[in-house]
Each structure stands twice: as C-alpha cells, then as structure tokens.
Image (cartoon, rainbow, N blue to C red):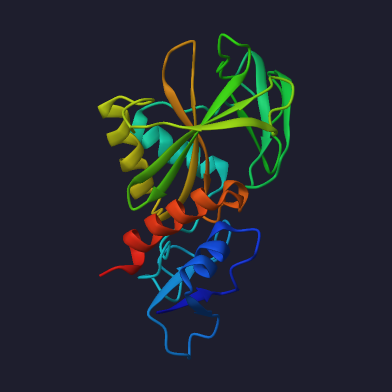
Length: 240
C-alpha cells in the first residue's frame, strides 16, 4: 500500500503522519510514482472546487475550511448559525480569525465595523456545574468514529485540561443532531478530519464552530489512542 500525500508530505505535527508510520504505510509526494490512494494535504485548500488534481483522493473535494464557509454550510444544514453581523449585532461577540489553526479570540462590543479576515460569533455558554467549559470534538472518517469531551478553564480557551471519550455517539447528541452533523460533513466534502462542536446552555442547540482536515498529533501521543485511531483510519480508507 502506497499513499500519495499531495501536494506536500504529511507533516509530523499532523495525525496522518503518525497513522501512516504506525500502519507501516509507504508515502510519496510524486504523482508519477505508483500509488494506491491519495490524500489532500492542503489546509483551507486554494484549489477551486472540483479542481484538485485527484478528486477521488481523501478530502479531494474539500476546498474550504474558512469559518465564514463553515457558518454558511451550518446555516444551510441546521437553519441557524453562530456567526453574527457586527454591524447589526447588539452586545458582546467573540472576534475570531477566519482562518483555521489560528489561536486567537477576543470578546468585543457590537455594533462595530466588519474586519477583513475576521469573523464575529455569538457568545455560546458551555459552562459546566464545575465552572469549566466544554468543547465536543468529533472525529470523522466518512462517519463518526469517536467523540471526545474537551474541558477547559473559562479564562484559558485554548488550553485543554482533560479529554474524556463518550462511550456512545448518542451520549452527547440526539439522533436528529447526529443526522445533521453527518449531513454537514457530507455537504462540506469532508472525508477525514475533526470538527469542534459547542452545545449552548441557553438554547440547547449545537453549533459546529471549527473544521480541520489535517488535525494535529495531540492525543495520539497516547499509544492506545494511536492504535485505535490508526485502526479506524485503515478500516475507513485502506481496507477493501
């Protein structure tokens, strides 16, 4: 088995680098070599839709992970979204970079001017009884494979204190929400990746706030997770 990672190698900070290493899979970046399956290795793909050279690749049609696009697809699927127009919104909002993997967030007062390369989000209360805040990370490989709760301190939103796996996908989500999450992933053309979801204490709705087609190594430092994650990837994309 040889995988084409195109247009660049799988970086060692990405999970796929460690998955391929664990599985003993040979990789190449040269499309002229013999290969069995390809994976798109571009963040927020700059290729126009349907213009990735290998559309049958894993994430071959995934071309846009900008938060504005995530919000647009979210609205199409759920009928509501987390994004607000800072010119019309009254009250506080969370100002975030429109680009993925940029750890920036600032609470700002609205109304205010729109800003290039930034999005404005409604403030979603996810605080638990123990005063920690919870993000829900969904691992997607042509279907939901794992769901993990990520608990954080309110004043340190980018630092995860603990991760706990849900035993069943129905534990954090209703059947209808699972269907909507799946529809969202199909509409955004995500074959492999991870999505971050918040559940609001105010309206009990879920909000998909981030999509990552090249998730970082993170919890695969744990050998048990590395094995389980690799096995799931193999089952989803390499077997058969």
